[in-house]
Amino acid sequence: MERRDFGNGLKVAPGTPLLLLEPDSWRASSLVAFLSEAGFRVEGQLSDKVRPAIVLANLAWPGTEVRDRLEIVKRDVPEPRIVAFVSSLASETVFPSLKLGVKGVLSLNASAEELRSALVCVMTGSIWAPRAILSQWIDRVTRLGWNDAVERVFTPAERRVLAGLEDNLSNKEIGQRLGVTEATVKFHIGKLLKKTGASGRRDLVKFAADSTLV
Image 1 (tube, one colour):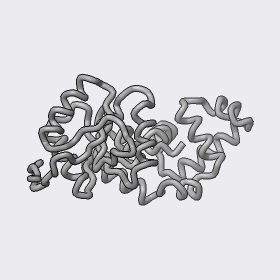
Image 2: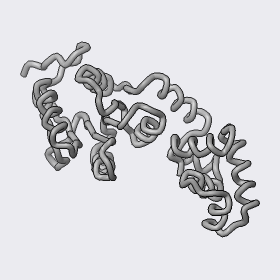
Image 3: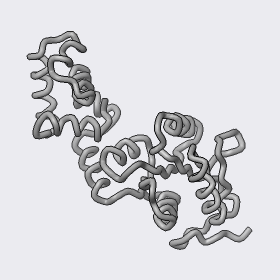
């Protein structure tokens, strides 16, 4: 079968499976039309017969529906190539997406050309994200690392205090939650400030939100 030119020299074989996780029916119909024209066979569910070459997910959708379905995909499909829509391109949306294993991040109102470029980029093994935010991500990973590295960088008590800060609790409220004194909470915050390089409590809260370490 003749492959269709999807742009930038990428040829898509007709019937290439693409899993679309888009709960918004209006957006889904528009995306299906665009992707089908490009040569993809768009599927809405993962099954034994569907092993997608790429996944397109709407992570801007409220609730956990799309995220939960994406976790199932990651469990059943080895190293899936994922492109995701987020509400806006900012560190607090891009960082968690990259940590989920997403390779391409687009704003919810991305143009057809942007979507095309992101799919081309991810299908050829690269990452599609704003350069400035991607640079911040690399700096953060280089400085702290993720997963097992988090266990080495932060103690369990520090992670619980960081979670309290992310929940906008006062030092007193964090102490009550953890069953420790307010002075102990202040001690842990001091350690967190030193480890993260944050300039103050507000910067530390932003760090927690951006990095999703807690």
